[in-house]
Length: 312
Image (tube, rainbow, N blue to C red; front, top):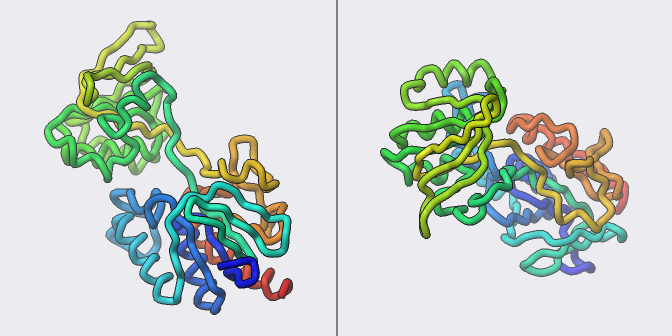
């Protein structure tokens, strides 16, 4: 599309919020394109099982949920382009979105880029990324059948993914920086069912990841109570210490974000830049739940429709 023939709606991202919005906008005959740099479905697509999404009493795999959302959006005419957004120019009525696949134009933009995994920032983390250091158990867990693993984190994601990894691993050492788990009671109860395959190490930092040329072989940590260094022999490390918003591309476009990078919106889900909206996990105040993201995507679509109607 060109500035003379822009899309009605350009959605940055292709997770649950983005796909939900696209279902609504395309069904309203608004030309809609999604720009995605990775996997359609976002982090939801690489979640082993979603157990709290309404309408699925037995749960649903993240991949199946994402695939169904995509098929539904596609049925109504949603287009998808693969590329990474590098900048957004919202000064004019027609918004310009620069991507690695070229410039694109739209009358309204929805930021639905979600979040990405935080990193520890320790020696060895980047060195062995993809060669023993991972952030997705569903993607890479099957590579470690009958191997020893280390999981870092104490929240919902760390516990959920640790439980999943017991399907393959011989044993999992769970390194928790704090003195207690922060995961929900439901997940902690499920953890009890596999406690023979998981050893929890509280008050333990993760300091360094070591290995040979091609693979990981140990993690070095510290007992915070005694100061004692600890070694954990392993073939793989999975890190789940939280999420950060994917908003680096917004730095120069004037969209207001929180101190940690989440996009601020008003009650219409519009940012401080007219015609640019945000929905889902990337939005400041989001609940970080798939059901909420889907709802926000639908709400954003309706607000975008109203905006476009007023600004024809």
